[in-house]
Image (spheres, rainbow, N blue to C red):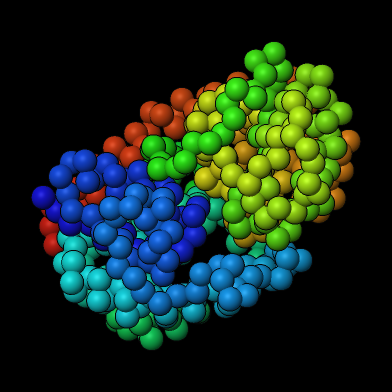
Length: 398
């Protein structure tokens, strides 16, 4: 049996896809461990028995570690890299190296934004795979802004000189050995990154440990059901948007029942009623089985989980990779895009009506669901990792 070390940033959306893959490998008898700046978060998502090596690194939301909420576009991307991703890599590097030396993995599985995992593995001569928890960088996102692409490349080169092998050449976001993309070409669309080492495995959908206290009996079988969520990383900017969503959905309460996720408690307190449920968290995968539409920020995980269930979307991208993912959704015909900063209740209501009642959106979502399931998910990802672990020591996919 082989050993796999997952190097992940302390971000829910980046840990969750790896959880299913790690569980599949463990079920096959392999040894699995994690390295992360927030071991408690990993154990909450992967289970209390997960073996986690701690490392240094900033945890979002702790000690004032937040981005200015009004940043958008290239400025938001630059701020994210300079303020969070690059410092996180340098902070993690020593802990990742210690974990590799103690655990002795056959393969390091490095999240695409946990650069330390890739660079330390390369430096120590350990084969590494990329866990691509967003497909945004596989397309042409930077074609119109080549200066941004050059800026990113310069920063990664400098980072390699500090924590990696100065003689190395691989982009730490894209392993030359194996890249696991948790999506499919049917959603991603044409991409310039090709090769047998790039494997589209579809979403990582697996049972997650969670307290199930959702009021399932509240759901009304006689009405369409809509889930509204901005994920866990956008609670600081969601007040206006969520308020407008609630207004739009209440206007349709005769035919629509809604669940609104408000982890930051930004909405005004409202008494529970039969039309709109405002809650801090939901068992999202289980809930999606009962939803007819999703309104979200175009986060990769939320989008793919909705489409896995054949549910069409209203996407309102906020920042980072979300505009790219939103374009993938609309390009595939599986949803409607609105402007996060300007969407009003009438606009949101029209968008919800469209995805609920225009059959093309649901048909597209169901086509993507079929493609996702055919891609193999966690089982396919585990197959590729097993081949990498037992392959030639140059580590390249066979």
